[in-house]
Amino acid sequence: MPRPDPRVPALDGKTNPFADVAARPLPENVVPLADAYDERIADRDRTLWHWFHRIEPEFRLSCVEAERTRRACEAKILAMMFITVADDVAERYGDRATFAELRNVPFEHQHADPTRDDVDGEYVRFQSDLWSQFLELYDAGARADEFADLLRFDLRQALQAVDYSALLAHHPGLASERELWTYDAHNMLVFVFATIDLANAPAFDSTDLSAVRRVVARCQRMARIGNWIATWERELAEGDYSSGVVVRAFETDLLSVDELRAIRTRSSETPIEPIVTKIRESGIEEYFVDRWRSEYTEAAQFIDEIDSVDIGAYLEGFETVFRAQLAKGTSGS
Image 1 (cartoon, rainbow, N blue to C red):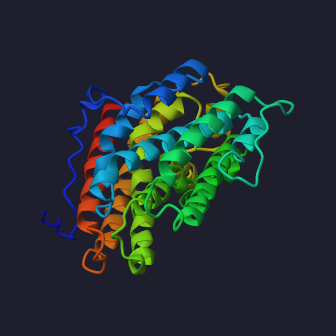
Image 2: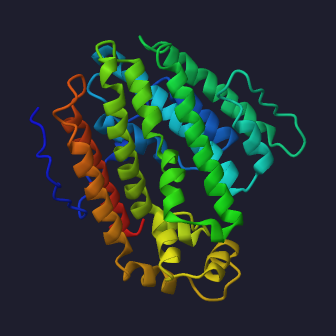
């Protein structure tokens, strides 16, 4: 497969390359957890898991052994489901007590107690069941033990990202683009997904690990930018102002703290459409597209430095996903 030109790619945001997302069935090991989610949690539409399953091959590290790709994909879907549940509990519902227990689930030395006061035990029990299935899939990796500490580290960063996002809901003045890059970007789980891939890559050269993670850091920011552009309007309508697009509007004095509070509490009699229009016309989305291009260019510098992973193909995948996110943002969905 030819490597892409390391120069900035042309970005077409008019066509969604994953328009057939619902046509691909979920893997058999994921279906029981998806069914349980629908029965016990049901905060999100099942289409989200189908979407992720459809795009997963695009950002899979090329070093994953062919016969291990299915299990790696299944583990990633469950990891994504886990962080989605945690995010909804912490941010959508503001349930700090339940989130505190959910943070304990992935770590053996921390006990998650579904019976504690003020805790929604059904969420904790579901997450515990989900995590047991995830570990079964992860532990089947040829190098699972080698990268287990790295996986736990990456998970802590992702859970901290959820915690930070929840804090923004209560402290609008806390919002800053710099802290979003430091904390919030980890919510995308790109480091977790890469670590799952490495656990299933017997031929990966460990001397490439540092360079690969430097690429992954940039790709995680690229993924976050795409997510912000695709979802900020919908989230704003739901009272969520944690998107980088909205935070930048706040930091550049396009929005005030009072407007952010009104968005969250929906106490303002002013419709939200004027705020959306103001942001659309401000050039903030274009600013983030330029930032995406910058991250891509920096990541592309590693194409010829890493031998055990095809970095060019990895970046091509993120470009494809970004074009889909741009198309969703353009449609306002």
